[in-house]
Amino acid sequence: MGIVHGTDLERVSSWARPKLQIRDNTIGDVNLARYCPLKDSGLDFQLESSSLGDLDFLPAEIICRILVRLDFFSLDTFRRVSKQGHTIVSRLPELNLIKRQCPDVLRAVIGTSARHFDLFALHKTLCSSRCTTCQSFGGYFHLLGCVRVCYDCFTELDIHLPVHELEAAWVFGFRPGDVEMTTYINTIPGFYTTARTCQKRRLLWDQATLSRLRKSDTLLNPRNRDRLWAEPRRFMVVIPAPLLDPTTVEPHWGVHCLGCSYSHKPGATFRTQYTPQGFLKHISDFGPVLVEDPVDRSRHAPIVEVEA
Image (cartoon, rainbow, N blue to C red; front, side, top):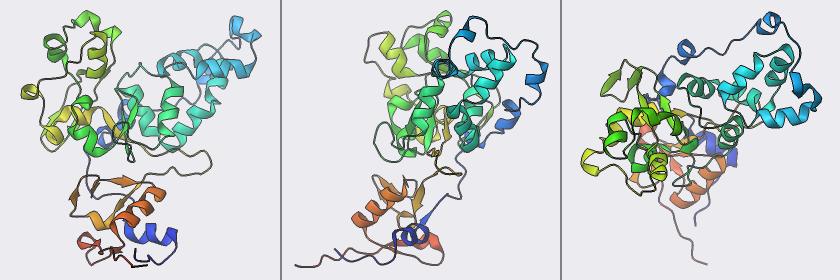
């Protein structure tokens, strides 16, 4: 195989771009600060009690282990109990890392009333890099599944298509009163895909959870399925999410290959994201990038096999 010159860092910085100049039209493009501000300044001074009741007898380390297993709404309730509760929650390292490196993910979780996963599960997902279905870099967080997904998977696979109220009733037999026993979110109004603006909140369910509760392998009929990448529901439940790293100030957002600007190869399109290590593996498989002007015309150079 031909030799690729330059250091690993130079290859990543020269042959990849950190972000596409394209609007995703996901929750990340909504004004989340409007629907879910994270400010709580002055709350500790408004609290009168400093006691946690019976929990005062437990070491702080044990209390922290319990708290990370709560959803964010329960955490918010706990921190409003007393000054000590507020202090303990505000010092949780998992929560502080998420607030520091990807606050919009936390805003999306709270803004959509996602109560079906806890802080531990969210932190674990954001500290992993792989898409739950294809194992490539997952640059998006799926609120219904609490998993990472890549663009191709969340826009194309049936399993990542949310279910609205009528489908929950027709396909899975759920009634409005069953909502509390399922995995669902309350969407945030916004502009999703290039096709539709959604001005009202609506409930969306996770169809994998509905199918499991009904002990059925039923998924939505392809005839009633969706419009794939033009289906707004797919974009209402995902938000761009970086790879958290407690050892750095900034998180890792992944990179896009300049050489794949016009590629339609599965797993190697302009939408595909990579970690720095994954990008170097991609270069070894597809060859070095010939950077053109403009950069959108860049392409992979042919790989030359060297005979032994």
